[in-house]
Amino acid sequence: MKHAGAVVLDQLEPLLVRVRALPGLNEKTRGVFYWKSRAFLHFHEDPKGIFADLRDEGGRDFDRFDVTRQTDHAGLLDAAAARLGAPP
Image 1 (tube, rainbow, N blue to C red):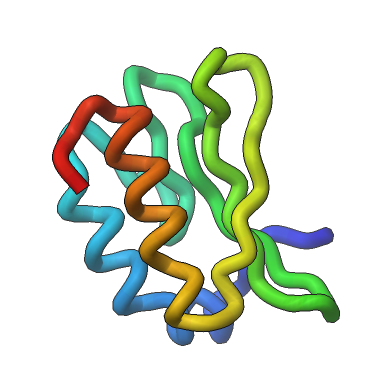
Image 2 (cartoon, helix red, strand yellow):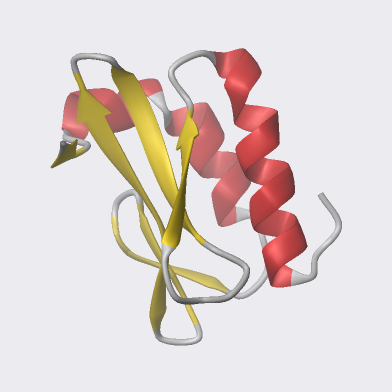
C-alpha cells in the first residue's frame, strides 16, 4: 500500500483542513502529520480505497481507518482528537 499521492490528497482536502485544525499537529509534508516529533497520521491509497494510519493509543503502532467515503471521516477525526486530548 503506497502513501497517498497528490490526486488522492486533493480528494481528501476537506478532511485535511479539519485535521490541520487539531491542536499540536505539525504537517511535515502534505498529508503527513507529526505530534511531539513522532509520526502521528498519514494516508495511503490502495485499489481497495483510501486509508489513514493513526498512531495507536499506546504509541507503538498505527490503527488503520478507511476514509474512502466522506461519511468515514468523522471516525478518524474523533479518534485523532481523543488521542491528542482535544475536543472533536
